[in-house]
Figure 1 (cartoon, one colour):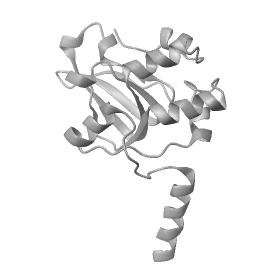
Figure 2 (spheres, helix red, strand yellow; figure 1 turned 180 degrees about the vertical axis):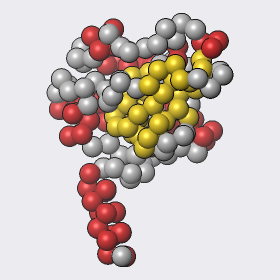
Figure 3 (cartoon, one colour; figure 1 turned 30 degrees about the vertical axis):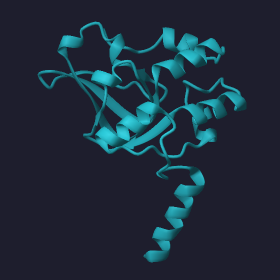
Figure 4 (cartoon, helix red, strand yellow; figure 1 turned 45 degrees about the vertical axis):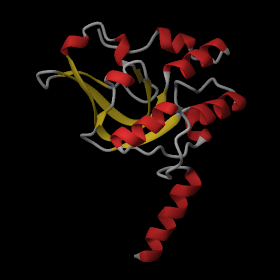
Amino acid sequence: MKSLFSYFSVLLAALGLGCAQEPKTELAKFLKQEYNMTPNAKNLKKLAEVPFFDLCTRPQLEWVDNNTDEYGLSSGENVPVDDDMESTYWVLLYGGWKLVDNEGNTIRESAGIGEWFRKADISNKANFGKLEITTQSYLLMVPEDKMEAMVDMDFPIKEKLESGTQPN
């Protein structure tokens, strides 16, 4: 049993899954301090398969790796989206989430990987309650200034942002 655990630990490390790393952004440092959330190492090959980033070049993916933070969250956990996090983009890399109103009703469930969320884009913020993880998930946290920088550097994401699946 011990060797099986060691094998999976080595495999996860090789894939870049579940391996904690130091925060790369100021928001990630805030999340570590306020929410005890520690970012995971990213796997560029897997990142390239996510529809949001599938048209990015290797240098662009490396920029994303160096300027964003990835988090693993479990079913039932809430993604921090209030106050300092309202303008932060969350991109679903794996798993699922749902938007829940203040009464606990599901507004919408995720359509799949590559979907993104930013609370600042919700038109009816007064009724929005939380962004809840529905199954083991990995999310990329992109601060607003980093997303703007990607758009300014002509990353192939502008169309995806404009046709996003944000709720009304």
